[in-house]
Image 1 (cartoon, rainbow, N blue to C red):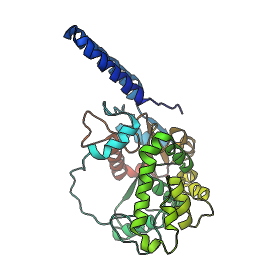
Image 2: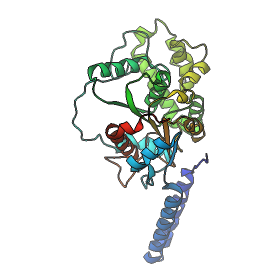
Image 3: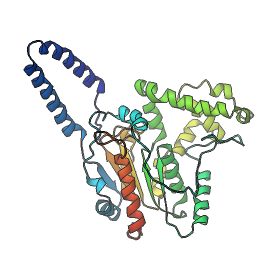
Image 4: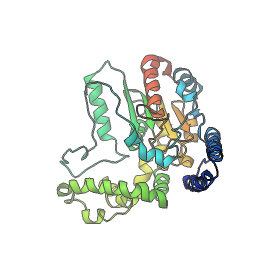
Length: 351
């Protein structure tokens, strides 16, 4: 896969240099300044249209699933136009929580699945959660199925939730009630994900912050956790990898952290997925680098489809001039969910 990277610092430097010179030009006449502004705008627009706005790449292990997506989910064939003023991957990732709004949908919650120790819940046992352990997820899915036996059930997973969901499907095979699954911005190979996040800029922007969030959760439940783990040692971790070495892998009984990372990587379980699963990743996602996206593994399983956008960052996928109410990711979810519920019979026996 071709890596499509762009140095945002170069753009910022060139823009600053241009603005500095523009002030000098304005002294000689507004006409010249306006011409330069229009010229720069045209150049930026050309670069955006040629290098940034592209159609996504759709890959599937079978023609039947591929054709279904092309017919029922037109978004997979449309050009993705990332937001004009913030298409760089890290900016997309950082801005999404502040720019997008919750959809105005009124619904009744039948079940809420919170991982252990999060969302203000009190931890009653010295155990939290990890991407490799899917016992709690399985319990929730089975409970929903027992409660609503006739209802078609789908699932969507985002980031680590997507990893957990993919691992669950790989472990269960045909023994699941789910009719379809969509996964967004999953980290497919944990070794490659952590290596990417340990690069200097990404370590500064993401790794250190996420590590501190994990440590804050541990500290909140320290009274119950310190009975089994060296919490002082855990609190000295500087990266996610160090946190997992000192806490997560030990908690779930792995001989080494490498054993945990191998088991947590969904790429090794994709061959066992037996229900239709659509996966959306951006090629510029620093959490899940493009060279680790499981293109070849997807090609070997007719139940899988992979949609790769040129841009979008990690759970970003902002589009439009002001991406307040909808993103490309939202449209993928809406169209795929509708297609599976209404036309799911066409997805039987994809092999």
